[in-house]
Image (cartoon, rainbow, N blue to C red; front, side):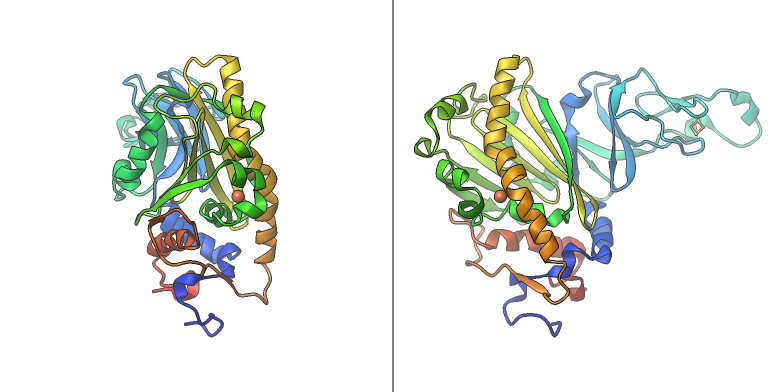
Length: 387
Ligand code: FES
Ligand SMILES: [Fe+2]
């Protein structure tokens, strides 16, 4: 045990360096982000054959595109000629993917189909068929698109596990959804600050007084794979009457008024259901002290503007306002605090270990940290615990 470690069980403290240290971040990139399934978007963002989005995950330029066979695929957004980005726009539609530099073009399945002046390569050994866009694993579950840089990782369904899929199936399996609102913003925090907060139930009465009154916690379930489900109710007595009326409008298929959950996926996504709205909030690490927060509100395909406004209100009430207005300053304060050289560890010792219950203590954070240690190959919540 490092000499600075507190005399409590090692699963019950965290080395504060893990929130700031570039070496920890480099190891997380290699052992967590490059190994696990990462949330990349919703399939409605590439609704038709030829629709594409581009994104950067871990500084890897990616294309996600729907093929003529309706399959959603991911490729490195890197031309096989001299490495230019093939697609420069954030999103668009194309019959073929053409590199802007020398106009090499690829079909929607990634095959290289056009090389201007191709005959000049005769005798060089260059073979067009051997130079498709390089694919990245991409799978879609319940409309959610994930990518994975690890060829050996289990299929997405196994990675998510049956309980998570069963939970998300209501409402995602019951209708066709689409992104009706998107927002992205950067925060000057380590990615784990948000991930931990999504598991921390006992900050709610202090930081989110409305949420605490209006949304009593139901049972939670923690899984070995690092994911978790927190069910939530609604208490009308804590909600202003006009708002309560609006929060009950246009409830999603299969959902009862008041139903809610927060599904936290290791490492990067939080999916929140509240009666009439489901949203996906993901965080993309941009470095040890920077995170890109992305928020997608889903509605039903064909929702009118008015219905979309109702869903947006639900999302603002239950997620955006609490997280962006109330949590974000807390996140930044924690990030600035853990930079202190003289304060070496934080404490996550509250409560007994349990994988289900209704009262959320630090057991929910400890379960998250167990997954972190598993992927990182360490025995402590610290790089000093390297196995
Ligand atoms: S780098 Fe793409 S065509 Fe030359
Ligand atoms: Fe919070």
